[in-house]
Length: 200
Image 1 (cartoon, rainbow, N blue to C red):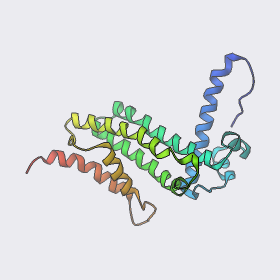
Image 2: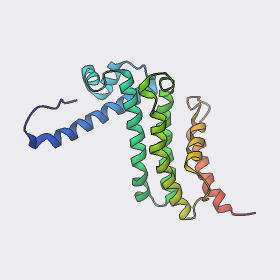
Image 3: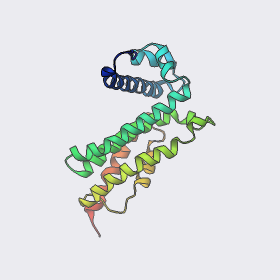
């Protein structure tokens, strides 16, 4: 990771953009390390994944709690920002919803890797659950509303219950005989099937 050098004001915007990209690379490397090795993954392993020195990580995140919180927030933001983009780019609102839920499942895999740390008494973790709900529930609700308006799914599914259901299906995702992603795909497909089936 390149350090931000001192220089003229003309280069500041580019350097700030570079710093954001470098931090994002670091957070993605840490998230990957947390999935494979847990939140106690050695900092040197995270640094190697990111292609930076160990000192760079400590300069950005002085404590492991700082790094865990940053990874969590980075992944929540990436998931939240993807919703409107998928809705604009997908063939149907239901397709956008399905793709977004798939990203949410990716997030949950890392979140479960963070679960033990997040259950600790560390003050830095106290507001993360509320942050997660505040950012992701409205995005999911927007996707559901669009799919319901298009007549693709029933209008009575709430974002909170869908996200809670997906979260429950992802518990035990590390069990080799259990395919959490497949079960979530069945759930999302079932929303559409229930709508198309109509009253009996």
